[in-house]
Image (cartoon, rainbow, N blue to C red):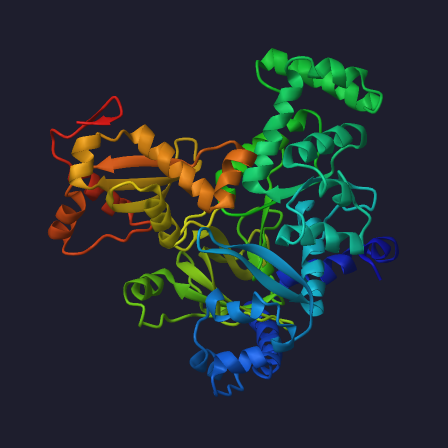
Length: 544
């Protein structure tokens, strides 16, 4: 029975239990589900050709043996099978393949197979997210078949394209514009069409990558400028109620000396966001729409694994999507410094409030990724919540692991990709570090600290602007996702600081160690910058 039919025939309490009942679980009950599904997955995966290839003769029969005998994995462990879509090697038959960026400049894409069991679980959990996005307390939700949702998602084969595909299997919510039409439109055309349809039909839901939804939301302000308002009032497709709401909002905006905001025209029931850096945009999105977005976490390899609830006070993990392990931050760094060291991991019933963890997943229901280091960092912000009457650990998504710089959910910048940019540029760069930093208005950017070769530095007197422009060209050339930051979001994420020759060697002499290239600590960066001679300065953007 579809969710839409259940809405008519089943009471809300039963629906809440079916789709959101995981919030009532105690930690032992959560772990019981985890262990049962993981034991099934171990048997299925171990008997597949892919599993046997990775197990290399081992035969674990329990979860404890599995964690002892099976190494952590990365995409490279699966690439030869998955990139060729070798379905005969997999634990279960894939129903479709999802695609995402692997590593800009080196590996263009990676793909992941989704089984029927994975898709069914994804579908159930997405319906739960939809319900929770409208909720202001346990058992309360407002979802109807005649609701509308603004289309702010990348289509298939990207993971976000699963949302409309699976949701339409369950309920006849109308996407604005329709998925079929949206796939034929450019990003800008899709936004304009979506808001135009929203003016006639209303908008009940909005879901998208946080950085994209923020950019899309700002476009509403343009409706209050130039001749857009007159066009709106005269358009036959706009409902009289919306024209009245617009005229009233325009008057309020004039009195308050501000631009039009989406909340002046639309009354969202539910607002969902996802993607890296969501926390940088939540406050602004709440101001624009009058409702705080509910963060969910989903990815190509892990599927949909977690969601906030009505209090917007931390992510709860679904028990049936993946088996979760957590590597403490200290163990992760020890492994980064010594690749031969195997970091310890802990299960959901062993995490500690206040600690940061790298997430490790084993995808259930016939998934291929086992003990997979997906590359995401979380902080456990609490065990249960008295106000919400929950018992499970709550998490805050922090960022990608330190070896990857992700800006707004668009990039996968690594040491290898930056080194390729440096090589292709032909610039005489002697050494560099890269850090993800945040502007005064809490927007992320990539900050390169560069030391030039001494001879090139003195003869060419390279300016920061020239260096920034030159490197930016090659980032766009190597990484299409980086290029999309400018094309879609209209931002340039690159900042460059030129360090005096010898700065890196002086740092190493003073500290006795070499600085990490990717995302060194803010303390180390300050120490590096402070090593500049007192008489060293930048005048007019040129080194002096």
